[in-house]
Amino acid sequence: MKHYVIVGNGAAGTNAADQLRRLDAEAKICMITEEAFPFYSRIRLIDYIAGDIPKEALVINKDQWYLNRDIELRLGVRVASVDSANKRVLTGQNEAFSYDRLLLATGAHSFMPNISGMEKRGVFTLRNIEDAEAIRSFADSAQHVVMIGGGLLGLETGNALRRLGKKVAVVEFFPRLLPRQLDVPAADLLAGTMTKMGFSLYLGRKTKEIVGSNQVKGVVLESGETLPADMVVVSAGVRPNMELAASLKLRCNKGIEVDEGMRASSPDIYAAGDVAEFKGVLYGIWPAAMEQGKIAGSNMAGVNAAYEGTTASNQLKVAGIDLAAAGNIDPECASESRTFQEDRVYRKFVFEDNRLVGCILQGDTRGFQAMLRLIRQKQDVSEYKDDMALKDFDFNAI
Amino acid sequence: MRSPHRRRTERRKVMAKYVCTVCGYVYDPAQGDPDNGIDPGTSFEDLPADWVCPLCGASKDEFEKEK
Image (cartoon, rainbow over all chains, first blue to last red; front, top):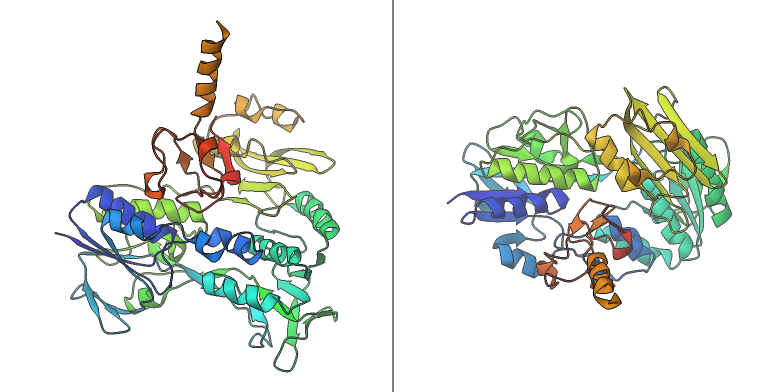
């Protein structure tokens, strides 16, 4: 009987465990996580902060899910080290778990930029349930919130706080919002909409310092402006949790380097999700973690499966703003593209060799799933290219 | 003579599959979601309002009918 140990209970670890059980009915499967909750939705933490759902509703897999699959879940347990010579995982409480195959699905943590004053009371990041609880309870007494970082998480969290009645300012180093997902026209349109909703936007600005004695009082920008703030939320991206990988001396770059079977550089050790780097890419998105976890689970169980990458796709979950982007959105306008713009609607389609490689759908996201399929299938769309820029083009017709 | 025809179109509509726009999970009424107490044969429309995607937790309104 095989022993599989999975470190981490996010999208990658959970999908791997599920796949292992599908392929191996007998094996002992153990998941170990520092988190206090079973598999839950990070995507919905913003809904919890906004008060739309209770904390319990974040949990995706209840206890029954683990029981049904005979998967052991150890919550609140930190893995201290891995003894790869003897194939054992050691916890902080000196408990040992032996493994035949090990999956590192340790995820990522919020990046903390080197800004003076980050340690002050009232400065937060958002990554897990505890962070969300802390933000929610502190927000009760806050009036002015400054979001450092105008990416998806920053805007969605900012919107949750705005809905709680806070004055929200967003500071973004890039001259436009969502620099990874939008080109200039799309970002301008979004900025206009968000300003109307009540956000104050400070684009192309760098944070110099968070000021206040112990408690946050304001944010000073390098341009000289001081923004009043009794709460600061930093959303400056994430970094993989690499401690175990480093102690195992696995080949790493920004993340743990894996092959198409999600194998790391040591025998019987696999990595998947936000901690894994595939062909130089750290995906950092839920669908990629799910897919990688499944592939890792297959290969760990001895069934060959190859990962082929995931099409980057994101939607901004802010009520009143319909915005979705996928693939290469060609921010510098260097590739062939077609666009449509009218009032609050902007669509952009990016082509390479007559194939759709990316798109932005704003103001009206109907057809996004069809576009994602087109990008994945690498279908020749030369006959549709010009029609795609038409106002009433039926994207499901392709 | 109209009612059998109508029933057939309703049935086809009711049993449509829905895709989660966040993670790509497909809700198939024929399979239901037994882990979360949803019996096979339950249409997407009949799922409880607080039902969420079993793979990523997205709410029902994040689903799109599969084409």
